[in-house]
Amino acid sequence: MKNSTFIAELHTKLGAPSSEAVESLRLLKAFLKLAPGQRIEVIEMVERLTSESQAETDRPLS
Image: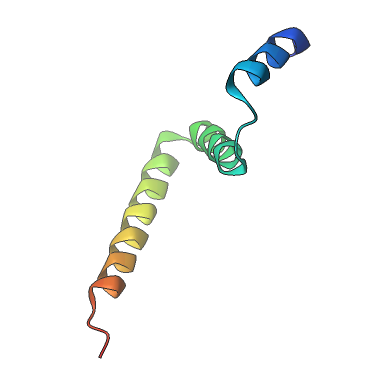
């Protein structure tokens, strides 16, 4: 993506990406560089953290 004309055209058509979109792409790029076994570990960790977070929000307030 070194072609500045192409980048300028994309920016004109799509606008500037949000910081969240940029960070998501960085994380995806890093994830794809991991070995398959490491990817599985990351997925399992995220699933575990998500289920723990959902369990906390499911608790009654009192």
